[in-house]
Length: 175
Image (cartoon, rainbow, N blue to C red; front, top):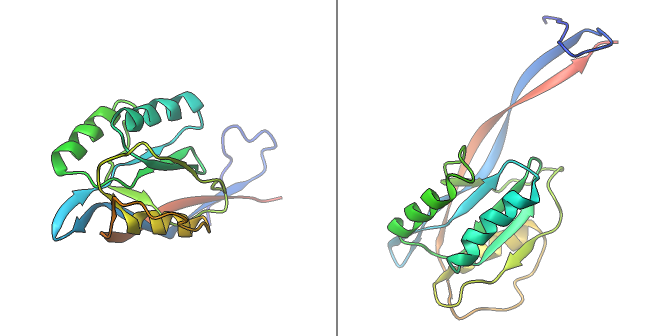
């Protein structure tokens, strides 16, 4: 174990840093309905600034995409349940990229963290496109909510899950 003095540590108390990995479950953007590929639009906003969230939600609203959104440890997750064809999904990703430059739009974290918000918000801006009943179900299950109404444009689609590792750093102060 290497003990180091970290800059900004005004007490000059030795601090060690240890790294560990956390396995995280995520949902991939690609889905299948009737053997045809579709995509979900995800946004992972790494800031708590409300204006940034408003700008992202404006894109979803202007494109008539229903979406869930909730606060995360570092910002917000926005998840649309609308089934999108590849070209439309790519054009929406390109439209959002200036707002969320460090996000690849291919996977969204599903695993809940204790520091994530407990409130789930929903905007029903879609009035004609197919939506994934399964994605609605899993998002509502994550927040212990019931799917109270069945929409006629909800269809079953295969959710593609992934497990990935995230690096965590733990700082230990030695007194």
